Image: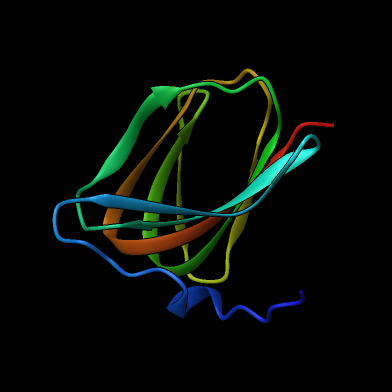
Length: 102
């Protein structure tokens, strides 16, 4: 079945929380939609694969390898494999994360 998804409307904010919804998972990667309430985030971690993040609403702070990047709606960043990174919502924001395993 083919489904058309309007990303911004496919996940809702939850007060004081980070909400995630996996859209696709396979042996070659995953596509996950996230909604961060203002001030919420993901603590520093690393992943063994490259990851592509596209901000679809709002504004987020990404610290990648100790370097800060503020991304706004419509912007994209690539987080390299094995480099520590964290994410924090400057304002409420939604992002699409594509993890590339192959």
